[in-house]
Image 1 (tube, rainbow, N blue to C red):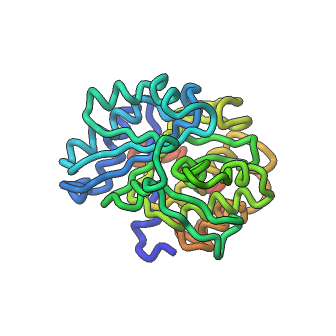
Image 2 (tube, one colour; image 1 turned 90 degrees about the vertical axis):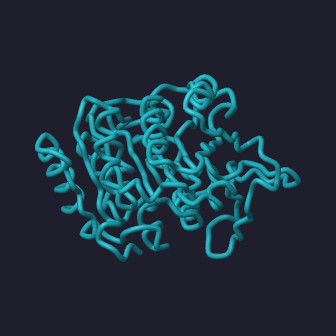
Length: 306
């Protein structure tokens, strides 16, 4: 559970300027602590479909630029796509071109050998055989995640920062015939299993791009609206709870709308495991400027009244 008040802070900015907005948000996080550190970056390139199905290339560019300006030691972006061949997805979305331009490493996780993974035992989880998590995220000094805001029609119900962690888990590992993603997506415990992934790796910063979101369908396509909102937090549970409140503010699926936000399986299980805050009362939603206050107040009302 979060023990410091600032760990439950979620900063919100309503803006039409993505790059400028991201820079304003990240200045709230003391990037001087990143100097000389190894950083692992998890984006959301589940498919080659355009934003908000996948991370907007401007979001990625601005985030990498700010990490570089913080004088980090090294940066590795690692990803496994669930819908499509990862290398082709990253090529089509411009990730390799950006890595050549800005100078960071790209790891295609489903091309990693067994040494690139760490086994998590099944004990205490709903995974029958446990699962494998990418070693790059366990060895880095800092882990940064950037996610989108969208519903998920294949059983996840919503795919925000907690669900984005699925892309750092192996589908298969050399020498092991088990298909871990088939197990996940075929299980009635899918949302609990998603939350359980997050117990086994730390995240230092989450940037959520909600400039445009899917309020139904997802993760690759769906009905979209444009809140023009950017969010950032150190707490995955807190930022996902705020994200769900945003979905509810626009009208969304019955699965995402039903009940208290902290009773939704992904969020409840993650909070139970100590991934982040345990209640809406522990979240401090902070608008960055006067233009963001109205949106923040509406979201906070939904977050804390249900």
